Image 1 (cartoon, helix red, strand yellow):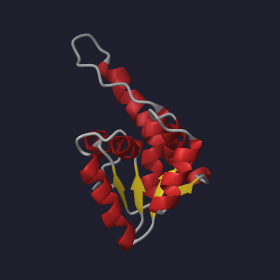
Image 2 (cartoon, one colour):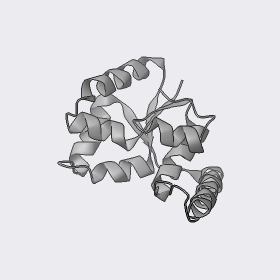
Image 3 (cartoon, helix red, strand yellow):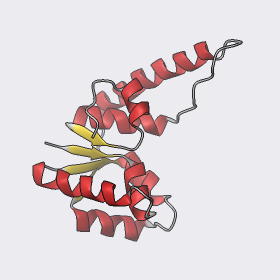
Length: 141
């Protein structure tokens, strides 16, 4: 069982947010069941977390056994584009007068989702609603 991790999980742990203990527990429970992985996009976003730097991020990943999957490949990039296109189309349609505008998302969210969908069996994230909408077949924990 391969578990992908979203940036917001790492940020919650490092920022000692109210859910940090639960996020740490979820990571710890995922390790014995298989590998725990982050995409290159999550790695890049993690470097920008408050009080984080490259040495800190690499040390955390090494200590927790989380592996960075830097290679996405054509399939993941294509899936990212497909999902992002659907989102952009929804956003354009929701911009009609009287329609409730959809929250703006960045391309990185779709890279993270496509990576988890194609390279993992499940994903730990704090943005369950986002990923349920754009990646409904992705198992979220």
